[in-house]
Length: 189
Image 1 (cartoon, rainbow, N blue to C red):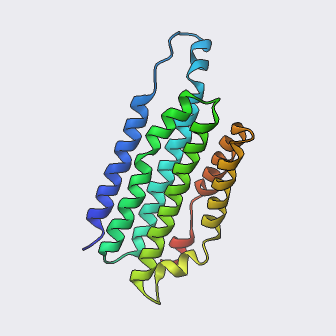
Image 2: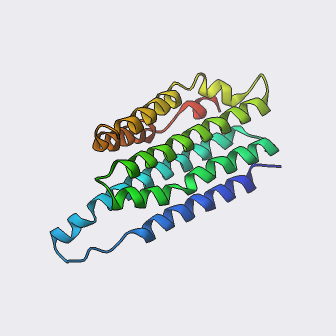
Image 3: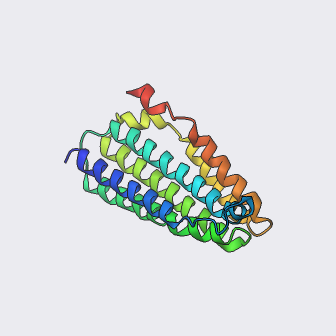
C-alpha cells in the first residue's frame, strides 16, 4: 500500500484531537482580567498540547516522505502512536483543570512519554522494513534528539513528586527542542 491513506487518516485524527482540545476550553466567567486568570492554566496546557500535536503532525509528515510502501507493521505502529496522541486532550484538560496537582501533571508526562516511545517504535519499524540501506536510518542515525527527549520526560515525571511546576518547564523544554524543524530527513532526501 502507498502512504497516502495512512497519512490522510493520521492527519484527520490529529485534526480531530486539536478540535476536541479547543472545544474543551471554557469561556472565562467574567469579562475582566481576573476572569482570564482563572482559565490561565487550562489555556497554557492547551497551547503546550497544541504545539506537541503540531510537532507530531509535522514530523509524521517528514517521516513518511522516506516511505515508498506501507507494511502491516507500519500500520499497527502508526495506530499505536495515534492511540497515545488520542489521550492528549484528556490529560491536557485534566492537567489544566488541576494545574496545582502532581498526579495530572505526571499523567500528562506519561502520555507524552508513551507517545514519544511509540513514535520511536514507528521509526524502528520503518527502518526495519526499508532494510540495510534505509533512507530513514541514514537520516536519524542514533536519534540523539529522540533519546534526550525520552530522558527529559522521565525526569519531568519524577520531578512531579518534588515540584510539579518544574515538570511543566521540562515539557516545554522538550517542545522547544522539537519546535526547531528537524532537518535530518530533508537532508537525506
